[in-house]
Length: 176
Image (tube, rainbow, N blue to C red):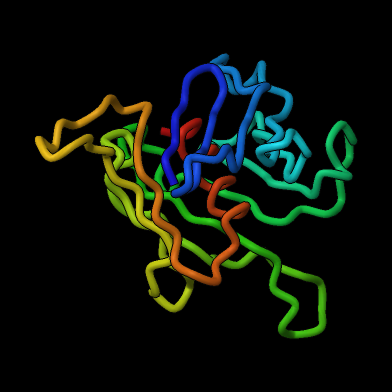
């Protein structure tokens, strides 16, 4: 996928067709951002992303689209945070609900993102250590001219949820 970020995001598939977009994306401070809505190429809302205002690790939560606008959402899909509260540390982890012990669900690490997102050079790994996606700077033509940081490539392994990876990318952009 090609990814272009400005004050909104546009994500294009291999065929050049618009696959995902974020129209309400804003570079405002986290405490001014209420929520970001990930949509498909036709504008249908898919996921709602919200920052936790008082968070040392830049935590964001993702919800099903039905929870968008709800002040007290209860169907958190995942929570994503910086692994360290040091501002220049790019490694992040994704926590998802674990129902393994039939008790109250706990958020457990399920993905980690390693590398430097600011330089558009990072990989997303699942809890088993398998690479599920890779982000890299996009080049053009045979001369391999690097494009700007707001245009990059996202390669997602077959069988993995593209919508989930897109949510990770949007949150990483806000965290980093």
